[in-house]
Structure formats: C-alpha cells, structure tokens
Length: 346
Image (cartoon, rainbow, N blue to C red; front, side, top):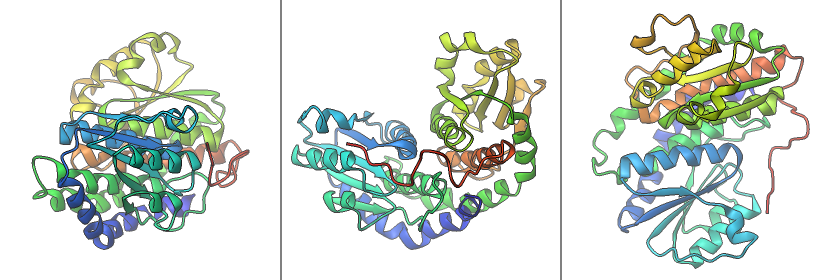
C-alpha cells in the first residue's frame, strides 16, 4: 500500500503524457453527440470516483447527472429509455458482473456507453462503445489508492473538454498537479503523528462539501477496510442535521477543507463542530474566518491547482492516515480481513 501511494505523482504525469491523447479522442467522439443526461455506475472506491464525476458533469457541463442502481437493471430487469444519455461505468478491474450487465443493458436501451477502467482488456471495456484506460498500472494492495486518483484524473480529462469553456486551459490546470502531489506526500511525518491519536478509536466521522465530498467518503472507506474503524461519511450540509447530535469531544471528526467554494461552504460546519467540542482534524487548512480555532491540520499542497482537481491531492494524506492507523493498531493494511482485490457483485 505504501509503495502504491508513493507511485501516484509519477502515475499522474504518465496519465497526461501517455494517455491524454487517447482520452481526448474519446471526449471528442462524445462531444459530437448532444447528451441530455449523464448516468454513472460504479461500486466501492470507484463509486466515489463516479460521485466526483457527477459534480464535474453538473458544475462544468451544466447537465443533470445521477448515480445508477445497477440492480434496477440486473435484479429487477428494468429497461429505461436512455436515448441521448451518456452512461459512464467506472471500475478498477472491469470485472464486476453487475456493472458489465448494467452497461450492456444501457447500450441496448440507446445510451452512449463508456467504460473507465484500469484493465483495457476487461469484459467491461469490451462491452462499452468507448473505453478509457486510466493507466494506473498493476495494483497489488487490496486497498485501492493509485487506481482511485487515476480514475479521478481520467474522468477530469474526459469530461472537461466537453465544458463550454473548452480545452484551452486544460494543460495549465493539470501541469502543477503531480508536483503538488509530490509536495503533499512529503508531509507524511505529520500524518504519522495524527495516526497515533486514533489507535484506540472505535468510531470516526468524515465530512466535506462539494468536490471534496467524495474525498470524505473515500477516506471513510479506507479507514474501515484497513483499520476496521466504524467510519461514517457525511456531506457537511447533512451533518448539520440529525447526525450533529452524536458529535461530542469523544468522537473524532475529519473535515476536508481545501480552497474554493466547497471549502468556504464548510465554515458553518466547522463552527458547529467547535461548539460541540469535537475532536477535529482538518485536512487542507482552516479558512481565514476560522483561524482562531484550536484544531489539528493535515496540510495539502494545492498551489496552482483548481478546486476541481484538488480531490486528487486531498485523498493522499488520508490514504497515508488509513495505512498508519492500521499499523498503530497492530494490523496489516495489505491484508485486511475478509477482503479480496476484486469483489464480484450481481
């Protein structure tokens, strides 16, 4: 897991240099069709990448987007009318039967289908009209790390050219990304210190808003599968409702707050967490209006990187945190109990 976390800056560079042209070609083909809606299908870690893509579609493309329930097609046999719909299936292995079957059904129902996967020869890629290879390379650790960030960047490169703003700034937007990833991973000593606080924790909450919300969900999953923590992820807006009642000084909360509108939207959430005396760790930085808060932080280097790409950086210290918490608790993050690398669902 540690080795694959460390590979990510080089991998991000490789996706752009080696795969950028292929992804742009698929984007151009998609752009020639006037889609009215986008549907996304995924499981596990890839589901969080799909949620990230949902924000991209809604914010950058101005199109409605939704996460599908594969069982509606595979278990219940539904066949919705999908003419002029873009259907994106996101999967690391490309081998989950329900994703293959739901994409196949979507194509039969008239959708434009695209598989985004780390296995270009997979059944999912073969079933789709178009496929995008995320080029993460072989991932051996059970806990997905580099395939997640590869999916995020591939989805960004696929969808951004479809935006009204065009592709003019795309190269500049991704140019600083790998360097920022290198700089963020270099801050690992602070992560090690933070991990020690969670050695005896049984429960934990993660929270964020906007483009960072998928990061909160992925962080919770990583902590559950490597450290066996009962981690729950909430949108900051949802946390302000009923779940806030469970927050107290005994419950650790990790809030993802990086620059941009999503981070600013977390200000009232941070204020309420402070009132509840939460054991708070902020990933990114505390907004200027909250600088007096006595909280711990895990910095994320985001200089020159737009908010839409920051989730690729935000997850890096949280991947390290999950690994170090597992080690602090005497576990083996490379051999989480009851899990295998490929999970097949129907």
